[in-house]
Length: 174
Image (cartoon, rainbow, N blue to C red):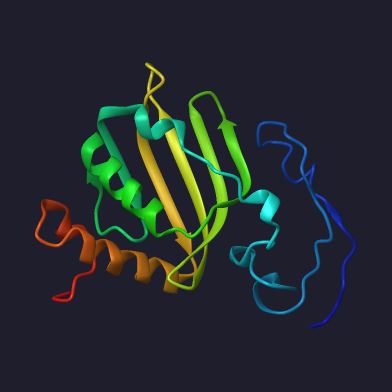
């Protein structure tokens, strides 16, 4: 406990992983799970990272798109369902502070950002798989920490109560 380690070059560790060199700066192991400071979902507090953002893929969903997330029990089926839930989630976010968004691989898109909703800090990672036509085919949205996941599930349960989507979320009857 409390030992500090120099930055570790992990290029050799990842040599087989698409040959992409990576460097973990200031990699210190201090206590359980290697957390040395605030969890990343707390964000940086840098307002410059809170620029308006609209995901291109929201208007380019395949008709048979699917969506998953830790706050969803099961999977969203169809562009209308995916769009409805994503559009609602965006209304509860106070902001989006981006660490990264962009292409990954040949058919993927990645977003990594932090936000707050209802006073709860949250880290969010979104992966989008594009089909051969370049449309968003499958979406996975994961939030952390668990309290943010449960809060978003409850908020979606309230929003979509009485609709076919209600069964995918926490409701007052759950």
